[in-house]
Image 1 (cartoon, helix red, strand yellow):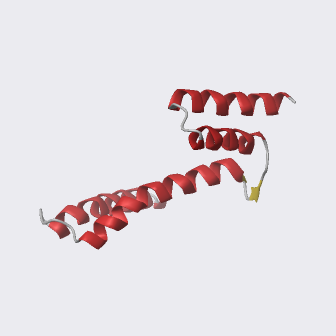
Image 2: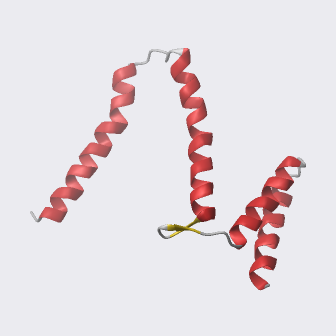
Amino acid sequence: MSDIWAAVVIVGVAAIALKAAGPVAVGGRPLPPRIMLLVGTLAPALLAAFVVTNTFGQGRSLALDARAVGLAAAGLCIWLKAPLLVTIVAAALATAITRAM
């Protein structure tokens, strides 16, 4: 087996072990309230990190381009409590108009 395939197998086994560790460790018991609070705040934090990375990242540097305008338009729509479809269309239009300029 080559080194590359060995690495693939090791990473696969490690991923399966990590996924199985949670249910095995908890064993059907309810999680403590502090852990549940952490789990509840983890998803929004990860989503925000992905949005910021994809909006302002370009390779290994920062970029301020049309994507930032689209994000600002989406943020404004969310602040004004617009429906999701309106928010998506407004962000796409703002990005497209900025790129066309």
